[in-house]
Image (cartoon, rainbow, N blue to C red):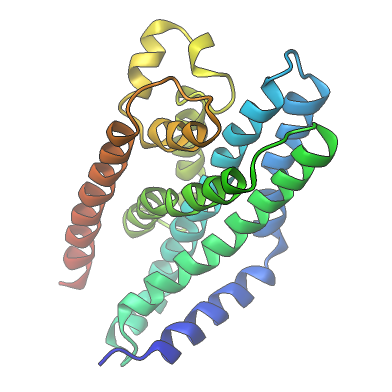
Length: 245
């Protein structure tokens, strides 16, 4: 029987745990904001780059908490036996997984709001109200496949290797997807690689809200993200069942 109160409590405990770990949340929040201030505001080489870079660094920033929260926490819980304890406890394991996604969304929301305020106040970024709201919605919902990537890494890696491997996945994927440098300025071969990365389709959906996408069909990017999400769900489920035996 579904117990909503149990899910809420688990999410609250997970959020409190992260809040007591400034080594996690301070870099997660400050890293994309600092990047945006330097490359979207200080070194603003064109009139439209602040708005473009706002979306790109929002995508970059919001991917991070989803991947790191799952990968490092799940790997650590596996190493110390907490994951085994949670599996045999009366609490449904789905509550454990959902709680981490909720806490990731809270930090992602903080990152987005800080970036929005920074862009609006210091870079003159102006969007319609519906664009701000739609952009925020796309950014939040679009973190799901990256949470699944983090969960898969957490189920596969040791607690010591997880942070390093996440960085090896997260940072190159962000660069190759055009989140640091606009995709059109990257070599043509790199642009083809981007088409196979979820971060590229995530960013293009967000850019479509403000009219700065490459012009491909929104449905193409949406289908790609849904496809990545379904595939990752299957792989995560398979990996979890193997750990259970």
